[in-house]
Amino acid sequence: MKRPRLSLNLALSADGKISSVARRPSGWTSKEDHARLLDLRKGADALLVGRGTLEADRMTMKAPGDPWRCVVSRGGGFDPAHPLFHTPGGPVHLLVTDGVAPEIPGVTVHSASLAAFLETLAAGGIRRVHCEGGGQLVFALAGLDAIDEIHLTWAGHTLFGGREAPTLSGVPGDFLPATREYELTAFEPLPESGECFLSYRRKPQ
Image 1 (tube, rainbow, N blue to C red):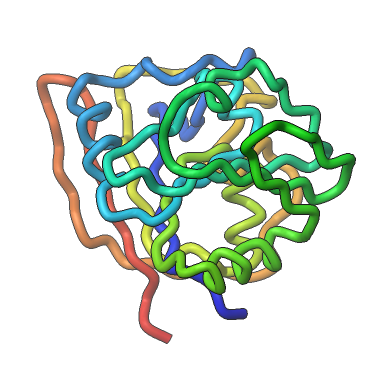
Image 2: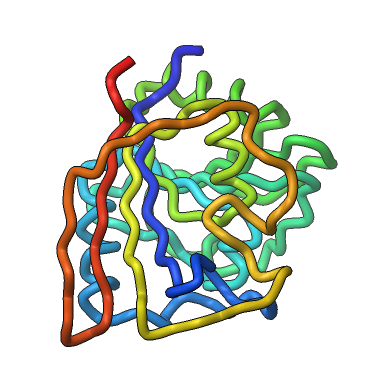
């Protein structure tokens, strides 16, 4: 599969959750983590999130350089009033993998698989994609073995708990089809905030 290089950034609670059972929106980590989020977006040709994350965080996905703003949904159901569709920035691309594609003015909609969409991005000149969740999308990308870099903020100050609280790869359920191996490239503790920045890259095959 010809695809762009893909990086991932998420925050994890002390017990390995990316959110609470109630799908708490972002903002529970430090200002340093927020600054890191913005820094990691730099140089990306496209930003990628799942629809659940888009809605929980009311994201506009606006970033320097106006990267493409890509959102993945299994069934569609996008809200045309969402701020994403009314905020200037890079072109908006919606992927609906199994549902009715919405009609939203000024928005490009794709009805395809996630793998085919990544190939479409590559064909469109997108060389680097940066994903910011959520867990179901990360699980799907890992299933395709399409993640090259992982950036995590381990937030030791928060415990979410709950069987239905999503982890890095979504709500606990099916396992990945194969092991994905990465090597640690950065370990930066932040004692004052109770957090630690971690970075990984895919191990050479």
